[in-house]
Length: 136
Image (cartoon, rainbow, N blue to C red; front, side):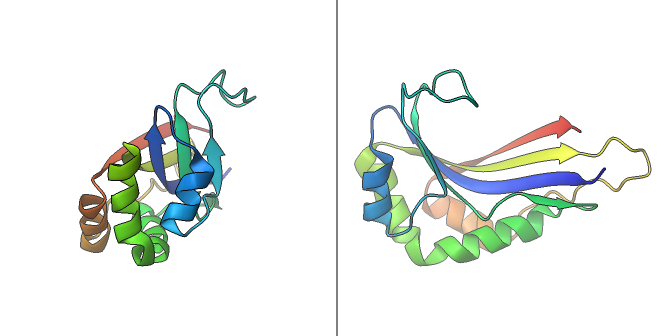
């Protein structure tokens, strides 16, 4: 069984309309959640969320360096808009890394790290990094 990984930028806040953030930033979220809205995946979102992802990757070797670089390359044209949205809507930004690791002892472990352009972007938009790992 291969490992899977996803890297995405999430903007979170108490009360904001994700569709309004889409228009403000100029790029459409790949997923949104609204505070209090029923969702089968989570019991009840406690906050609203705007998320942008290039999708989940399934492969023998997950490379977070490559995945985060690709994501940020897509978002750099919107960097100042994202930073302003964080301030205007009172949001907090998080680069989310979600890894489901193959438990086969012979399977390679993921490469986890971030290049300088990714870190510079995250600093610019006042983002933190959250890495969640699960066993397949």
